[in-house]
Image (tube, rainbow, N blue to C red; front, side, top):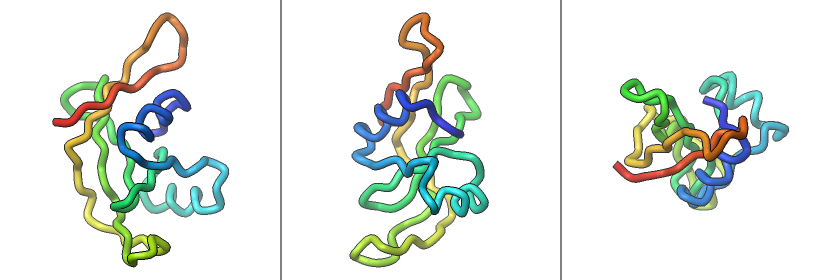
Length: 105
């Protein structure tokens, strides 16, 4: 799932991760491989947020690739692995921009 800038900022803080900008040269390759998502890099590898099957207001953080080297220069695709991190997607106020709240399962 693609996230709003507000959601991205909140998730980056909670995950201690960096979002890969949509304009980055690698983004089209990631989208071909994993679909239309906002992608996050952290110390463990590459993650995405997928909509929860149980609640449309919740997203689950899923690891889709891990670092293949100690220098964090190469990613190795892995079987998608759900993490304990869930992201609550809702509106902060009457504005059109959704917000995200993160919690651990």
